[in-house]
Image 1: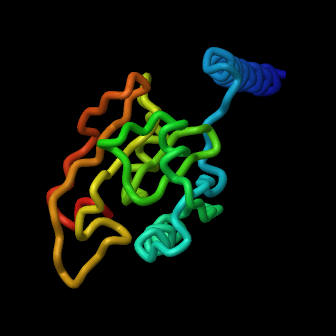
Image 2: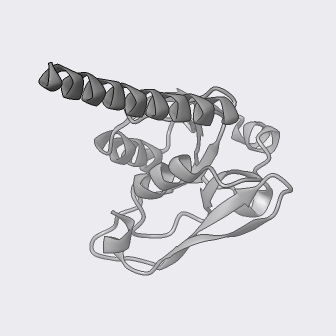
Length: 173
């Protein structure tokens, strides 16, 4: 009889621990507006680009290779799209990627930093930008050349700040 009581106590204890974990998780989800962030599948990006741009196609290959699903759309009026998404002129580049939750990734932003941004989702931000198409960024590879650059955090008020400085080709992968 004593063995059954010990077993029953352990089962009750384990059940209480599982209940507490599930309750905490449920409260966390409700506090987050009911959304759950998972890594169960590839992140979707819709990429708007010029039909003739070769570097955009190379960048798309880079993000696909790093786990993103991409829907590429050719668009001849990219300026209107960029302005409608809050991307100010100084931060604009050759293509615009938009995540399914509306964040923008302007230009040759390495997939590594897109993933980091989507995990963090910095408050008051609309996305990231690598303006001016620096040589050596994903999609802009040329021989063994590399230009140090900054990935900018684009804020909803139209300003930006440095999200990360990339000083070597290795840092972006």
